[in-house]
Image (cartoon, rainbow, N blue to C red):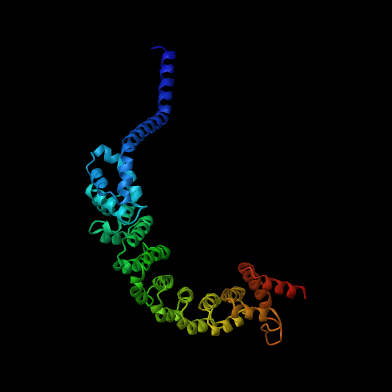
Length: 379
């Protein structure tokens, strides 16, 4: 072999090696495209049958799908899984039963426990949650175990799935996951799951307002307010004395959401000048939501608070009350505004009052009030 031939062979070998990765990528894409096209052809005639099963009105459709051969089922399964996460009622039940017959749900239980890939574990946990009450026996314990998974995304998916199962007995596990030192579940994720479980978790949350973990106490108070658990007003009010500021702020917000008159006195105490500004601001907003006459008087005082945040929240709360609250703002915007020891307006209370009145008048389309404010500004 001459030197020229050897050089050409070497250049050809280099070209083949350079093209190798690109050629492999092209071949993979071609194979995937052909596979997807074949599945689409197989799914086409079966699509109406899947939609009938998802409607919940045609049990025969689900039975027919359960008898498909492996090739046709592989084409149908992605559509079934997609619909399972979207439909409710009888339709979801029919799809879940279909997946159980095909062994998909049992496989999800195994994969959630033993799969090495966090993506597979998360996907399996999501499927178990989508199945809801039709999830296989043992799904709850598997999902509870995943709350301590080493992957944070898996933990989050497990929490959401527990919320979808609708079993209030998992509430303590969700709260414990929030209070862990390691592999902690974000409080927001746990809150969404607890809210899905509904009012039946209120007693567990009420007890958790005195838990050792501040994150758990804060989460419990927050969710109780969002659930409208009026019967737990006393427990939430007690959290206003919590050593952690975040817990006290969330408790104040929760009392405002409840709107109970029993919350008035604790909120008035929380709005005291000795409280941190963040708590006074939360208490001001909550007092506006309670809308009691005594609360309006306190809010009128808070409009003159030295903290800008507290003053603005108090003015906005008075405007939201309407009626007596608007009257108090009108007094504050005029000569009756609170004054400090030297007779000067404190914290710009008149300006806050006028701003809140203007927004209220615009939102309520109150032309008379807008004209009165314009007259005040012009004078």
